Amino acid sequence: MIEMHKTSLSSDYQVAIPEKLCHQLALGAGQNFTLIAKGNILILVPTPDLAAMRGMMKGANGGNYRDRRIMSHEWTIDN
Image (cartoon, rainbow, N blue to C red):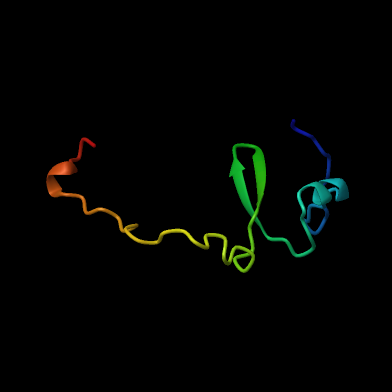
């Protein structure tokens, strides 16, 4: 379900995120965002803290993840 919230741009060009939305998305003070502009739409995507991601892939098999070598006959201008 999509929820819509209303906010405004301050004279300092800051946008306040409603408290209810911050709680729903577990956002805290100092949270970083990536801004994506498409036409007249602005999307704020929370940027995860790299320290919080540490150990996320624990136990994953890291072997054989090298990019395979593309042979010259596999790639042409038409691809």
